[in-house]
Length: 312
Image (cartoon, rainbow, N blue to C red; front, side, top):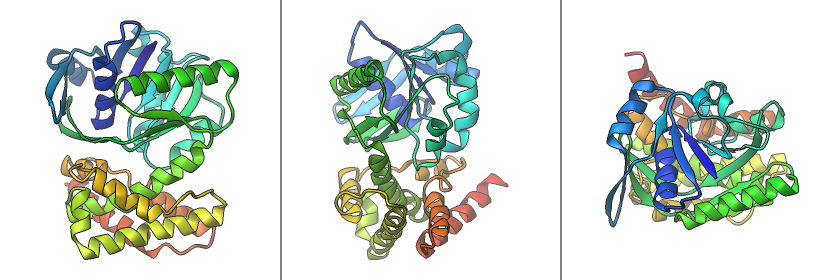
């Protein structure tokens, strides 16, 4: 399989490195970056994958010229939600009618790209609880193991189903525990609950995931944020499995050393995905007459933090 990963951030480099290290000679792994200068640096340096067993250097090709690559079998989209529209335009030469375009964004705003049926590829959605921390450009630490679900919003045909099962098998062989879900929308909401409870709070408190559990105030807010999101989901008729609060606390413990993507963005003075995560809960709450005061407050706090560095 020809597998591309667009977006050389923490999660993108994690998936690229694991697939590369699996050493499947039948696969071609490459990274696509819209910044030519960074792509050149990553080609010189390689992708540095750090885990508990040490650091490995992966000589994964990085390209800033998608028009020179041709159609891929799979493209993993690992860019931030606010960069998704521009990223898809940049990646168009990589996409063909049989290409699986796998969305790995946080939140649920990216669902619209599958619903509008305008993509020159087959949209697939994924949620992953793998923990990845960016230490420097192209240098990531695998901070916590999790599970990755893949699925179609609407049933695919037999050939698409087979390709998706093959991709899940490839990921699993690479050490990323993966499976195909017949109800990916429920899985996306499960991941949204986790992000709603963890990401923004780590940004406000400047703490790792696990450190949220050491503060009674942070732990209480986490529970309240997730309960509000759960109330919104129930009002929308979204299927909910298990207890979202308990699941979020479990992820906090399992990824205790992980620095959330939002805290990484804040520390790097980048725009956050607060609008795609807690912002989605707030917007949908208003549409369904469900109050979300804790999420509203958290959004305002993160926006204030962003304003300090984005306008300076």
